[in-house]
Amino acid sequence: MDRCIVLVDAGYLLGAAATLLTGSAARSQLSVDYRQLIDQIRQRAEVDTGQRLLRIYWFDGAPERVPQPEHRRLRVMPRVTVRLGLLTRIEGRFQQKGVDAAIHAQLSELSRNRACSDIVLITGDGDLLPGVMTAKDHGVAMHLWAVQAADGAYNQSEDLVAEADERRLLDRSWLTQAIKAAEPPAETEQPVPAPVPTPEPAADAPAETETDGGLEHPPPSERRIPTPSVLAQRTAPPAAAALRWSSDSGWIDPDDGIPLLHALTTPEQEWEDHEYDVTQNTGEPREVGRTFATRWSRRLPSNQAAELLTRVTAASPRIPRALDGELLRYAARFGSTGGGSGLQEISDEHRVRLRAGFWDGIGLTAGHLTGAT
Image (cartoon, rainbow, N blue to C red):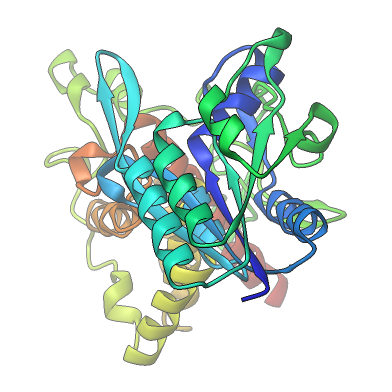
């Protein structure tokens, strides 16, 4: 079959890129434009092999094999398939399990079924040598791509390099079109959300800002959006300082009949919400909070929307207990809120970002109502 397929070992590609660009192998130090990166891989693969691309397989590790935000973005891109192994923490370091085995199995399966004439492999792991040899034995041309190493170091198995039919280097200039060192977050003042027709919202609630590229929301500031424990220390006795979230028992007054999202959602809307979450929502905590709040606030009965939004906004930065619990359960579905799918595994940092996104969504709807009056 005259087509090419690309197999990407994401741990190698992004880890080596991080080492080259930041001096550290930590992928968290990178800012990656995944759409641009996939386009670059596709174009270069087609030029190098002289064949049209059939598919890009993206192999990576994830806690409990739960897709992270970047995996959610990647898996809905055309001709991209994401395969996840297990990401575990051993002696303070994250290690992937099952990724090499998955790449090896894919190499063997593709070549055995003659699914393509050329395979591009982006990795440095010598454990994949048997898979490369098997693919060659089935008549597949093997192209091995290396990420430019920092300070002249070598980051690929010598045996793997020797076995490849063709070799290419992904140098700094190629990488930095899509991968850059992440900029440290700057502390900024949180904007005040657009007011509703009744009492003014709290100053801690952020609102959207306008940019040339469309709506953009500023990063949360932990100085302006306090963690639950900080709030507890401000307004409660020391014994209450360990409260993790505003939905904890005794933290705020009962919700007084504030409707929940599930009660406002029709079966048709539930299906549309699920479709959107699977294909478009990246799972980034602030985006999750904004999506939840926008759905909730825009589905309120028209004759109660202004009054209910005023009551909720007046309590900022606290979120009514039952509504907050529903927000956490919604966030836990994405598995990207602290390393697991359980509510207790949502970190304080991600809870702060969820809350900031919630107030973003409330501000959007409040501004809409204000503009309509």
